[in-house]
Amino acid sequence: MNILFLTSRVPSHPIGGIQLRVFNFIKALSHEHDVTLMSLAERAVPHEQLQELKRYVQRLEIIVLPRYRSYWNCLRGLFSVKPLQVHYYQSSIFRRRLQELVHDDRFDLIYLHLIRMAEYDGVLNGAPK
Image (cartoon, rainbow, N blue to C red; front, top):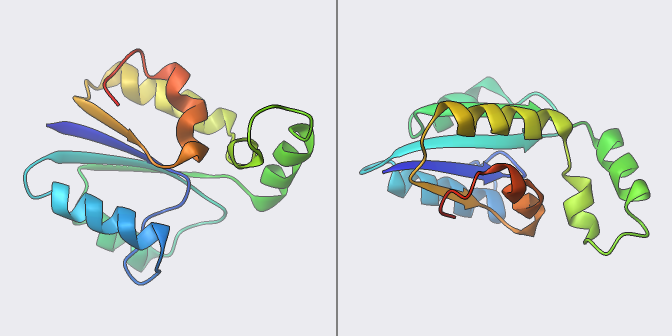
């Protein structure tokens, strides 16, 4: 299967919590499936972390979303019915790149990690999630 992972933070094995869980999920799936990872990051990701991820993914897309932009997104979303987590991780660059990726590739399954990524469901053209 060709699987696309959408995450709000770059998965990593030395970091615990959510990032470790997703990293291990991708690692396990990569043994039998082609995995593409598209993720947001507050700043450039260390080379070592990228190299580790590249061992398990066919394609890696990292979009930088600076913290000041995320704060601005939350401020704009204060009176919205959507959770602030969703606003925090909104990126028009991420959205455009995701549209291109979904248009260019056929994914058998798309994994949106946490409610933070639910905002991007609208550009997935009905792909299985």
